[in-house]
Length: 111
Image (cartoon, rainbow, N blue to C red; front, side):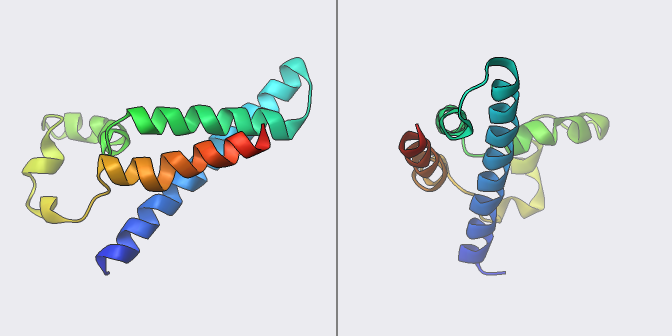
């Protein structure tokens, strides 16, 4: 698979996760306090965008694989020491430009 296609897939996965988190959070917020869904959804999108902006590019991947690496007896640096470590990954700048900024922008338009 070409590098551009892999990066687009990674970006789209992050958008889907952010949308699910914002939808669930917005519905929970409405259930607790009431109010319009669009504003709540936008505010949570902004929050998710800031969280993704502050975390390093591969932090969420490493967190999700921590149990598997611990079970296999590998440390948290395991992805960098494996032979397939030359596979393309989104850098921190890529996550900021292509994931966090659009999430914050859409959230600001909704609020």
